[in-house]
Image (cartoon, rainbow, N blue to C red; front, side, top):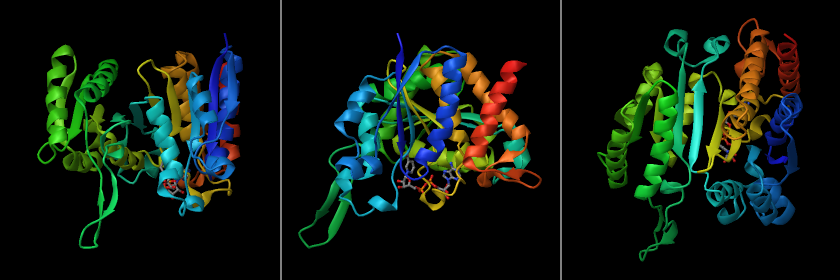
Length: 363
Ligand code: NAD
């Protein structure tokens, strides 16, 4: 029976990068006889423009019927003035929450060809291969009450609630321990338990759970130290697990270690391994429509889809090998251009990856 994949291009550079990733999806679909059926949908600003809702019911229904979702990115200045309850990013948060996509996997892997594009010295980042596991449907981004209220003296006050239930911490903990077990066997749990009670509980639960994973070495680190260590000695890490907001920030910092945020894919998984796949970056309004966007993070997100939801590791390996070959050939979008390499457009980078897939398949 065919499996449905929902395609949500989103806003600004979203459609440009998804077009290239879709070519790769089409290629692996044929090559590995995956019998995938594609459905297009609207999310974010594009959905607000079409029907006034950043996450329309049609999109939610299509998402529930899909095995996996490929998303570009949402948001941008066109929707800065809309009511904050219907902002594009709210649509994305709603989709993640409705589908219970609690586990966000953000690998930060440095392709050796891009060591020079990193903001850190090559010896600090060469060989970097870390995985940030971020809790995605809880914590301060979803906690209630939230809002902006006016106090009795007329001053306004903004407030959010940072809350995690035991079950939410255990769920992300199991995912992270399992992933660490399949990688280097080391898990660092990041919290702020010297200040925030919610993360005192987080640390306690992670510590208790480690008894079930004797083959995984668990350590703990405060988030401020983790931010410092990530830019000072990032190779000390294997897998990091943390809450929603800390994970959001740390994974962007990790992005720069790899040369560009345009290189970083992500997966957001539910309890059954179904998931949404998207680049870690946003909709990059500053370069939209100029053919400058790097499509590799989105293409590598397709590789993650093959590995984590569609159980086709051969396709994942093929895509990753094709990306590496494309970089070997010196193709670079402007964000990763270094001395001696060719600056190419978004679609030329996509051409390069598809040509590399063909070439590697013929070998
Ligand atoms: P951004 O990630 O869109 O851009 C940050 C910088 O990185 C910009 O200079 C941009 O040009 C560059 N960049 C990003 N992706 C790139 C790519 N593929 N190739 C080359 N360069 C790339 O972050 P921002 O500017 O803070 O946010 C822009 C909009 O995106 C905002 O509305 C924000 O809310 C939204 N956003 C959406 C998501 C998402 O959809 N998951 C994530 C983050 C931000």
